[in-house]
Image 1 (cartoon, rainbow, N blue to C red):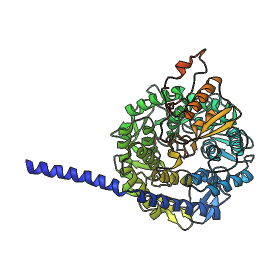
Image 2: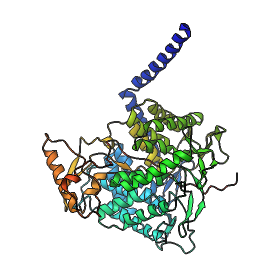
Image 3: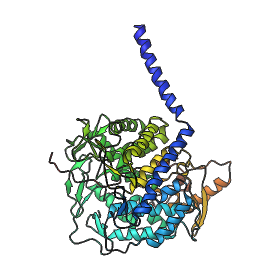
Image 4: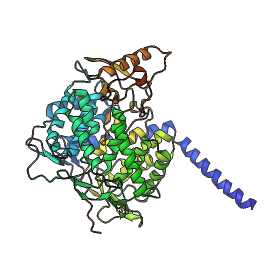
Length: 558
């Protein structure tokens, strides 16, 4: 028996050595080499967009021209703006800010997706507004509570507000930017299209002082919460006039995804215990009814019976989201399941049959989505597991080998034979490239642990910005949570900031987490009580998660 046992130990020891060797071999030099490769990928795509597609929304890389897709906003330029700064290109960031101010117009007769306009345009402009000082641009007096990009974001968001004027508070999916909601507009909207506004709209309300944005976002979230089934699940599409579910498949993927994401991120951004409690209730139901051997299936929302035993590429955000609430072990197991699919095809097909271990008919494409890379970035920050760097390496190699063409990077139409499609989505530059770069750049300012920060003087007093804890919206646009406390502070927040500034100036004092949501409904509070650590704290890692495109109604036709 000793001989087989010794062989077993030798194999385990060899595996451990291999794991350690990989970790050590991925040195700082290799990390830097992959960063440069990711930069080259970005500029190959970005420069081709500028040369062949601007001012259209997106590049068509096979024909080297452009097309409008989501509303004629020069969308790729807005989506790529904060990526430029994360890659260190300050001069181009400054140039694009000027271009956008002079060229983008929201007063146009265009039917626009409320969801996509929010996450890409409003989110991109808000992120760039909050990063503009880091880019060395002169800011106007009162920043971050004022500024041209903030005014653009507010203008775009106001164009979306008519969509929220429904009996339930849940918005229509499409709005005309000039005329509002069409009388013939369908009232059926997907769950993600209803529940993905609190990050951008609450940021707008805090910066501008106008509560209408946060109010409508919260009402939409509450509408979905009230409409959940008796077993705690939500379906895929709902009638926003009647609250009747029109597609009753429940899962974590397309059409639902970013609703769950924004409950977590909204809770962190606003230090809102109610939003986190809502997510944790959903998370319990999701584990009870949809989880199977670290995969997540689709089930009927009222009965919990399996309706689709498939993995969707959009679901790959889930391990990253789980890492934000501390479920690291479960997140890693699910990540490994998804990574095996990547290694099978060199990308994630839109649908993957779990029982058959292969693609689903007519869902074989990979439009260069970021979700698995995003989860790798979060989990690497949390664990340092070198497997996550392997995914980043594989993603760079696969995308460059399969998708790179003369005029950019093309969507993979079929992961089985690697045929290409004539589209490069703007999220490739906003998310996929950004998360790849941040995975290989542990010292990026986005990963700030609070050891560095800036202070600014606003009309409401001195304020801290850039201290880390950035919260990515679902299009990977980072929001600085500290900035929300710079504008129109409540009286009870004023002493918190003053005390924090005193602690910063006095190195002997230990810094405390004082940025938290207080209960506006409480009649009184003691200063001592307010100093207790809140239930929700802002971890030192960056925040993010994503699912860029809306899903489809899942019809029971199989």
